[in-house]
Length: 189
Ligand SMILES: [Zn+2]
Ligand SMILES: [Zn+2]
Image 1 (cartoon, helix red, strand yellow):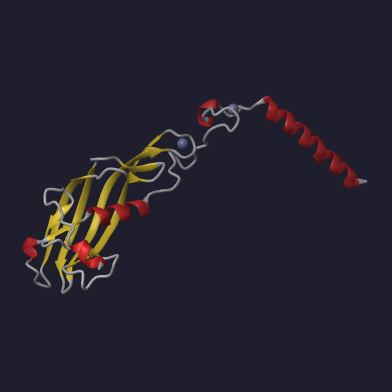
Image 2 (tube, rainbow, N blue to C red):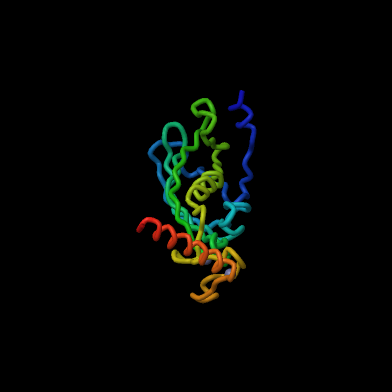
């Protein structure tokens, strides 16, 4: 049974993202607020942007004992580092996500996708990871109006100047111009 195999997976209480719920005492209605500053886990990001490993993540959490387990809700705030999808310059930013997860006392009450407590311990890292990945921009940009790179030579257009162009493009454009004006003349006949 899948729930049994999941029960045997024990959490490391020394892991920074493993949180003890001991003080809630499994009494429904017991609640505590906590603010934490935790190091970001490794490999948290998508192609162009992510949370740097060990960067400081600020958490503002509410832990509440309910009948089936412990409900964790709150916010996490983390710095982001990556590359502009248009010009490849470094981009730094930050992200704030809402967290909400019910950690079940027992696998019997939970479905496959639900999170379980290991005794009095819960692991917040997967919840944080899922929320951040959903919130990351797929195409981060250094500025909303970033012009990106020249498709011909790869130079950054913001630095190349407004008159940056290539002869090849000019030639094609000129012949295209010629076609258009010829067509216009045809129509006028
Ligand atoms: Zn850019
Ligand atoms: Zn160019």
